[in-house]
Image (tube, rainbow, N blue to C red; front, side):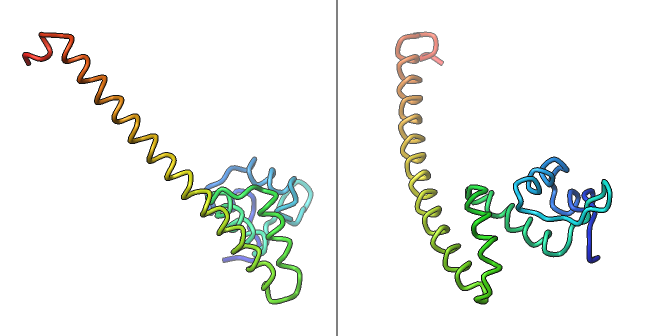
Length: 131
């Protein structure tokens, strides 16, 4: 892989839009090299984008992601970054499990209501119950 990539190459490699890359640049999450109107993304930008996209998929806020990325520069072999990432990941996992459990309950209740409604309709319509 080359040292730098154009915005089009980044879009193709990460399946994002130019608007997304410009948004992350405006939010100071990516720092491409500017050559006139051209943006060139470094290996560091590619690594950061990979982490941004993963963080978004897991439901982290952009502010959380920014703070975690900023910890990389602390110079402690990323121990602080890793510790904070694990703490945030545990919190997010707990939230996701709770959401899943709540969704499972709602799905079960809705299924029961649908079954009840179907039984009610069959009981009220003699033509349907004869079928």
